[in-house]
Length: 184
Image (cartoon, rainbow, N blue to C red):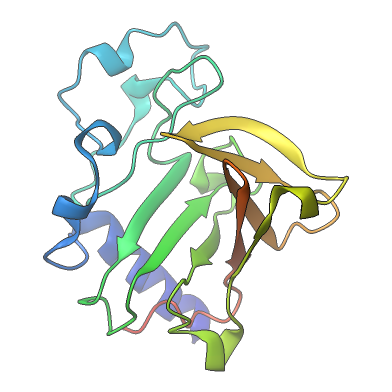
């Protein structure tokens, strides 16, 4: 039943906007713009993370990530959105879906992660942490993906989380294996 619920809700994220107020919270330069010709000017291997010819047209308000060259990354490689207060009363929840391996399309076996600064899910699945960059694990690796000042890191020793580095702070996004970030 959890799989069916997750698939249904995942489809609703892909097909409809989640909440009514999120677009004003996403800075213009980070918002996905499907008409942005400049975003597609990067040479990318066919089928690569920045091959925007293959990018699906989602209607949800999504953040735009960039690769280590500054090229736009397809939203089906890193899908990142707010689950704002209209999203099942979950506060400032931010949701991210990536492929089985970061940098692969979500169709390769998508994994869901969440950033929960208001601890809306804390009672049910555990809160997210924010730590200092001095506390980054030695096994952590910079993926090269960027969203503004945010750097996306992984830790092969802890595949159940993704790390977002912002200057001296590290946001620890937890993997959602419970389905509780979806309330449909």
